[in-house]
Length: 408
Image (cartoon, rainbow, N blue to C red; front, side, top):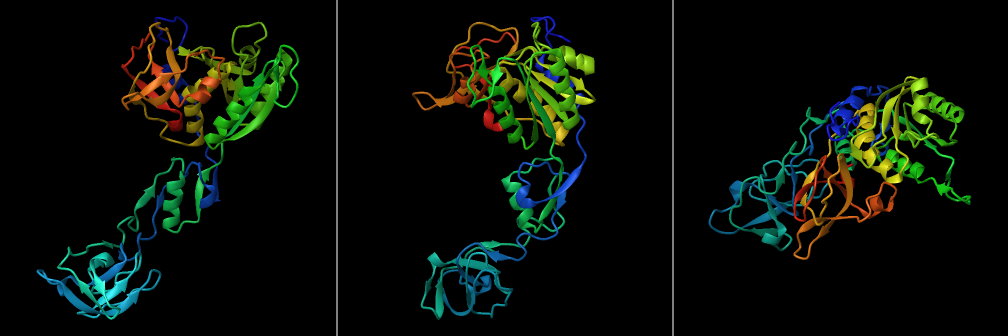
C-alpha cells in the first residue's frame, strides 16, 4: 500500500488490481436467439460457415458487361440480353451484350464490369455505354466482407447491435453466451424510504437503489433487490446472508464508514473477510471489498454521487470480469479544461463535467459548480468525468483526462 499524501488510503489502480485478482468468471453457458443476445457476453468464438456476400454482386443499379466489349476511346452501343434483379440465381451473359442489373443482384458469368445507369443511355432494347471503365468496377466480390472459415467474433466480448448483424449475416440463429451475473443490491439506513411513500421528518428517498439498478442493467446483468436494511447488526447480518445465498456478487450502499450506526463493515468481517477498505478516491473514500458467505462483496459509500462514481471506477470492471469479459478498458480523451481547480486534493478525483463548445467552437470541459458527494444532479447534468491525479490542480486551457459516461 502506497499513498504518501493520504496514509491508510489505497491508490485506485492498486485497489482495482487487488479486486480483479479475486474475480472468478462464471462458466455456465446458455444458448440464446441472436435477437435476444444484445449485451450478453459471448462464450465461444464464432467462425463463418459461408462467404459474405455468397456471390459476386452488383454495387449499383446499371448494366453488367464484359470489359473486353467496351471501347477504350469511344462509347459503344450493346444490345440488352438479360434483366437481373436481386434475389435470383446466377446467369450467363452472351458475348457482345449487356445485362440490365440492379443493386445486390448476382453478376452474370462473362461479365466483369458494372456501368452505373447514370452514365448510360438506353432505349430499352440496347444501351449506350461510355468508354472503358476499370475492370471489376462496382462489383462486390464473393467473400469481400467475410470469407468462409474466417473467425468473425472472439469469445469474451459483449455483443452489440453490429455483432448481432454480423452473426445474422452468416446465418447463425443462436449463440452461446454466459449466464447473466446475478448482483444482489441492498441499501442501508433507517433514514431511507422508497419513492411513492411519504417520508417522515428526517427521512429521504432511496435514490441509490435506482442508480444501481440502472447501472447494473446497463451492463446486461441481473439485479437481485434485497431492499432497505435497518441500521441494526442483526438486520444487516440477515440481509447479507440472504444476498449471498441468492446472487453471485453482493453490493451494498452505505454502512461502510466509521459511524456508530454503520454495521456493514463489521458484519462482513464476521461472515467473511475484507480484502481492502478506504480508497484514495474522491468522491467515494469509504469503499470496501471482501467476501460474504463465499461470495464477493463490494461495499459502496452511502452518498449518491459516491455510489455513481465508485460503481463506474471500481465495481464495473470487477463485475464485467466475473461476467466473462476480457477487455475491461475504456478510452480516455485529452480535452482542454474550461475551468480552474487550484486547491489540490490528496486523492484521485473524478469531477462531473460536461463536454461543451467554447465561443470559438473548440471543445472544452465545463465543471459542475458543486462537486459534493451528495449532489447527484451533477451526474445527470454531466456527460462524463474529468480525472485529476492525486494532488492535481487545473488551470483553464490545460489538457485533462476525460471519460465520457457513454464509454462506461
